Amino acid sequence: MRIPAHSVCTAIRDDIVSGVFERGSRLTEELLARRYGVSRVPVREALRTLESEGFVVTRRHAGACVAEPTEQEAADLLEVRALLEPLGAARAAQRRTEAHLKVLRGLVRLGQERARRGEGEDLRSLGGWFHETLAQASDSSSLIATLTQLRHKITWMYVVDQPAHPVDSWAEHGAIVDAVARGDAGRARTLATQHAERATTVHRLRRADRPGRQPTASRAGRVRSSQHSVNTPGVRNQ
Image 1 (cartoon, rainbow, N blue to C red):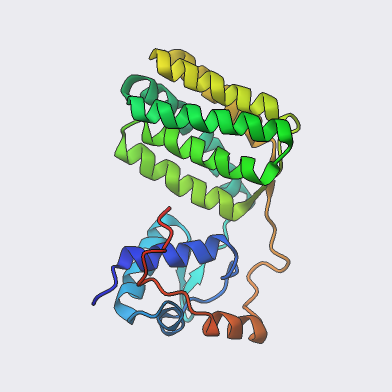
Image 2 (image 1 turned 90 degrees about the vertical axis):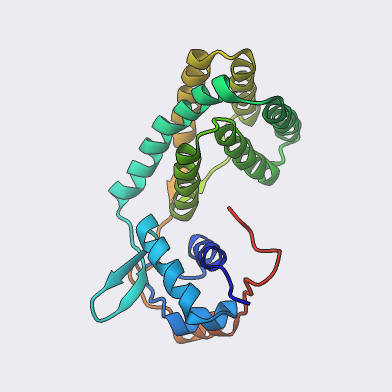
């Protein structure tokens, strides 16, 4: 059975974002095909997709390599997100369904409970689910796809610290949902803009120890021997 290229693409992207493949390291088709248990054809297609997304670059005499974005490119990601998330909130106010509202309210309730208990790791996951659901509620496929790609890249390039006042942060989430529920697109946009501006301050650039470094022999060996099958239902589709 032929493994879909999008499944291979998701697996490679996940490994880039999580740091399994370091910035600047080579991505050979043979190594990737072995790692994910597939042929080289879906790997080749996946690398083309990842290059179009900015995760991979093709270098002369080296082939496909993990990209090495600059600090300015990283800063641009946060700026673009701060522009698009408010648009998504405004669209959500106009297009959301009751199912979206139910999920958003449930996430806010859980987030507020976890914030009061100081459960930071749970809050990071809940925050991601909240913003993903809010984007889905915009009912705009192009906007959803762009915000999803931005989330991948921001996770790749930044460490996100816990807000100084997580309870206040989740109160902001709740206010956004209230505006969306009322169908108040202007208010939803304004609140989402303020929230995005405050959220930017807790992002710290994730710096590689030695930018452009090739993987060491021991690390390369671990990557080659690690099996990450994409022919399973457990592949995470972000």
